[in-house]
Image: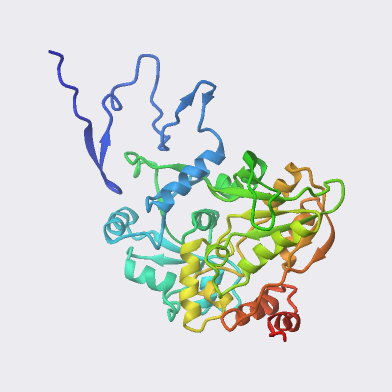
Length: 416
């Protein structure tokens, strides 16, 4: 009889608990090959065409997955190393392990928006609070509590801190990060994903540059039977984006285009809190009736904050907070969305000039900044109601949206 295979060996990680080690992983290196004693990132796999994980893009994608799973990520800035952990996802046990490693050197990174809400009036820069201990109660208060106020001086953020906050935004969690400076020796036995801060900072641009079409098919819609869906991979995080081509638009002239950020509550369930569903359906219908157009359906739920943060903001709005004030309580500025990749989608579809169907000046500016011509603009009106009229007025007054409230109210008025 053949001997039974040896069970995997286990060892104890100070940060992540018991970890199973595949048989042979700890064997001595073969003759002529010296181990790398300073590289503590996850091992790179190989494909037929060579190393597959050498690009910054893939390393950041791994870091995003780890960060969302409440596991620390190792950030590198030259010789400086720091462990970054989502403040909202840190449980008591993980905080205890972090505390033993930090030895009083940890700090909490918060966005300028959250610091303003804590009492730093007019602040525009990221800041940090020293954490003598990794106290989850204090961290939760500073990062999330509505009535919290600063309990210590705010220090300026470093490049490592800024990259950690960007990693949180990319991961669609609260923009609040526990950061602990470490030495290579201190984390030598930890299976951490490591990423350079320059890779994190350049990730969005890299995503836009590598955007590609991965599938397309005709999808007849009610009222717009001649419609094609084109799926792009990339753009925002690890997600897909969709171009919806309605009819047969003339690509040699200015094409009617709408950049529409996904809204699960409004687009799918008909929420009365916004006008997104009306804008989506009315745009498609208008395009079907007017020689076609293209709607870009962008995975940017909650103005780019993600569905969980959107629900947190909705909870605050139900308590009387304005839509933008609610976002600031959570640490977000007016709008976290980026539209450079949307312009890349249009270029890949052969479009160089557009009629922008939008009320948002930021979208118009992004299209023009990407080198496309905005030949004209056209407003897209939804239906006002008792639940969304304050939201619509806030978009007009605080974000500069081109919304004519008189025209909206006339649209909602009953007709004989």
